[in-house]
Length: 151
Picture 1 (cartoon, rainbow, N blue to C red):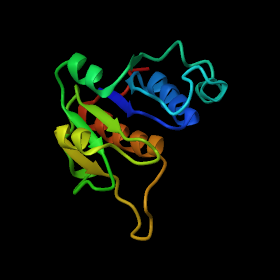
Picture 2 (cartoon, rainbow, N blue to C red; picture 1 turned 90 degrees about the vertical axis):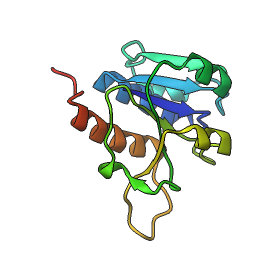
Picture 3 (tube, one colour; picture 1 turned 135 degrees about the vertical axis):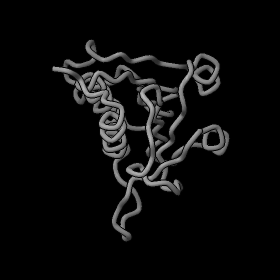
Picture 4 (cartoon, rainbow, N blue to C red; picture 1 turned 180 degrees about the vertical axis):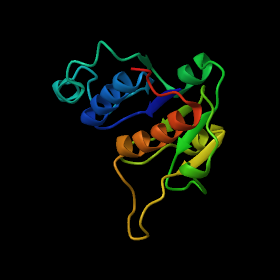
């Protein structure tokens, strides 16, 4: 199981995702370019000292990620998803893809997804923080696959 951040805009979100991955034993793939310098101090502040504990892999582009990606489904979280994340059957080698905070993913990335899921929300809500949504889907995926750390 891995969490994929597609061209993230906000360093604090990447830091939070790195910390989440380190705590849950889930790898993080960062598909660049990012909307900030990756060594930004705000990224380090959010990740705290978990950066060295996280399995983080950076890819210079979507094409590089697609070319290098090992087996496993791409599961995209999107407000355009028709299937609720809690109704989906996850697999242990899934990669949960989070789009840019400012605009999601382009159509070519959307079309490449094996499944497009949405987080159930109140009708009046537009969207939630991308890392919060990723954490919710990741928790359900780990529950289903018995992938929680055995600490």
